[in-house]
Image (cartoon, rainbow, N blue to C red; front, side):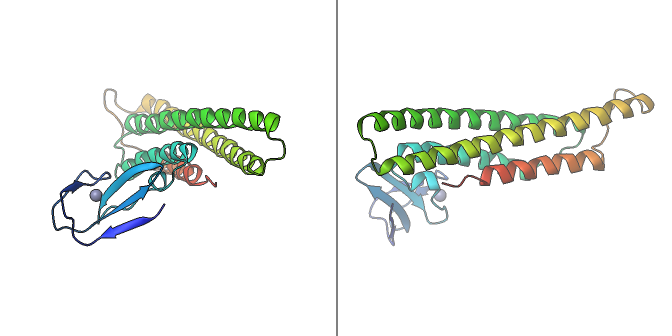
Amino acid sequence: MKIYPVTRAIKEHWCRRCGKIIKKGDPYKYTESRFRPKITHCNTCGFRSSELTTSETLIQVYETQEGLEDVLATLKNVTPDNAEEAKDLLQGIYDALEGAASSIQDVSDELGDKISNMEEYFQGAPQLDEMQERQDALEEWRTELEDAMSDVSSAQYEMEDEESEEDDDEEEDKLLELSPTSKDSFDEAIDKVEEATSSLSL
Ligand SMILES: [Zn+2]
């Protein structure tokens, strides 16, 4: 989809990304297509992949990916104080991955149905290969997301171990500061989630 820049707004708009009001006379940009309503952005915000496609399937897939990117962006600004907090944060990302994997499963199933229908009625249609490739890519990404879920679980588990060992000789009723080993497990898990999130290739 094409992006149209406007130097001076003739009327007030608002940015779909940050919600800021674009005042009369301000510059802004928008996308427009026969198949999708206009999307307006202020000049600071960039368009995301989900906003630049008219395909229902791609909108759903990119929005899933962007949802994970948002969770990761929030996590980047947080340093957990103790193992408890680190495990909670990891649980948040685990749940996000689980939700993403399940919506990708839905998209992939839907695509699979379309492929079966086409195979039945339009054998040898040129779109079939493309659809099959897309479904394969979605399945691959879903596997990556599920692998990242296991990595997150292991990181949580490692922290649990460490905590219970230390609990024996440390004072009670006091949360221990996150140990360097736990911090490493935490960071590694986040890195793996980041890798998995960006591994989508359509
Ligand atoms: Zn904006």
